[in-house]
Length: 250
Image (cartoon, rainbow, N blue to C red; front, side, top):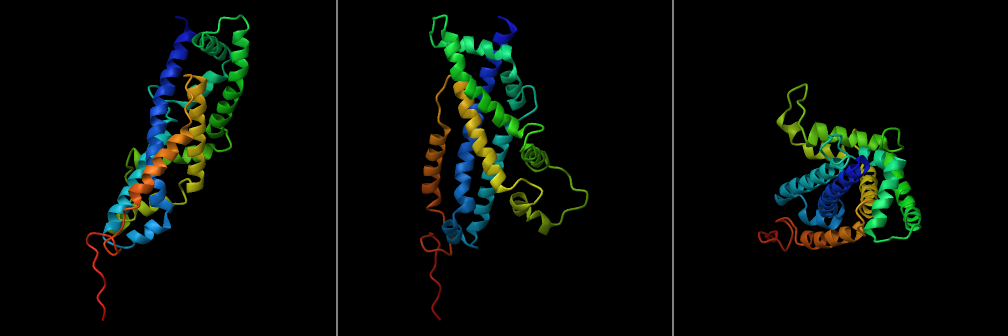
């Protein structure tokens, strides 16, 4: 087996691992979304005792969705690396080898088949290079990824020790700081990053592994499930909760 064949096998394994990771990101993100934005849900939970656990669950879902997304952009040689995928797809010799492998997998034996396959694969390659490059060094949105990696290192995957002792009151504001601090990417930036990663993975699964997998359908499934889960969530101060007690009439 020559070097290009080994590189193609490695890339296929990497895309398969990335597919599992993006599916986890979808699960967490679509379940988190109503907890963050559903005003009716917020009103039902209110300032009840149940709100404490609600905030913890919301924070945990956000944390895990960001961890899953940033794992797609690891620099560890044993992990999924978008930088390596970008490097491989920019390599003309590698892409030519990938075209040949794809043509053989499709059972196309005509001498003109590889040219037709190449023409169909080139727009996908160009689009995924553009999207990965958007968040790579020198890209228009590289700062978003840089800040997400800092967030992961300082708050999510590791816990940096503060320079000064932290009071109990300050430690109780971790969730608010995590979601609202101006030093982290905004929700709008993270949502764009999430959507771009869905598109990157949709293309890669088709281009590299020959899978037609519309990830937008997966988001609809988990969004549908989340709607029914959060529909029952309410605090004890809201009618319908098992511990609800109507206020006494004076």
